[in-house]
Amino acid sequence: MTPGELAEQFELYVDQLGDKLSVALIAAYEQWQAGTLTTAEFEAVFIQLVGTMNAYARTGADWLGSVYLASTPKGTTLVTVAGETARLADAAATLVALLDTADDLKTQLDRIGRNEPTEAAQQQLVHTYNVHEVPGYRRRLNAGACELCVWLQKKHLDPEGIGYIYPTDKLMHRHTGCRCTPVPATRIERTAA
Image (cartoon, rainbow, N blue to C red; front, side):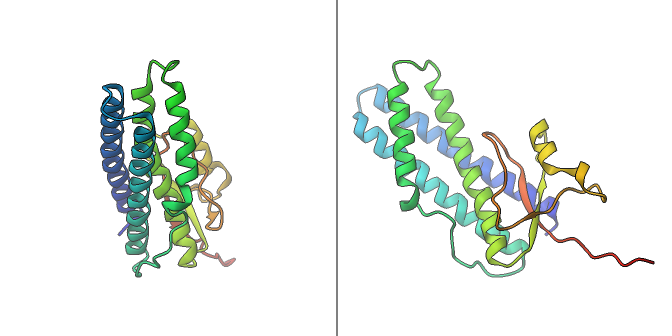
């Protein structure tokens, strides 16, 4: 698997997860607004949906990273569903509180649905590389990457012009909506001729 194929598979995977989570979150929101779900039930559904999809994202990222590394999955995840329940509970409570002030709650749920699995998978890929003792990774830009992502790739700091190598013990710098892929990388030592 080439770095390009890894990035392509990564983007396809997180886009599919994000699409499914977005649809599920909006459906839960509509059930809540229709009175089918109570506020507490909506918050519980939000936590379960996002937590479960993030777990799928991490598992898939571990598998994808392991396939790329031609190794077996180490079976460790950076964050577990139980470990992020408190963070997701806060997010659900914040969304519920915004109901009276936010006209675009569906848009926010869509953004959360698309962003959460991507962030979970990006973090897990870096964690998987670290567990596999890969020394570093490069930022592979997605199609239509923003200026921040281009800058974070840091080609301007690399004499070879292929991007800065980040250590795998550091999580990938990202922003909401970022779809860049962390790709394993090492710098080849050059000998003076």
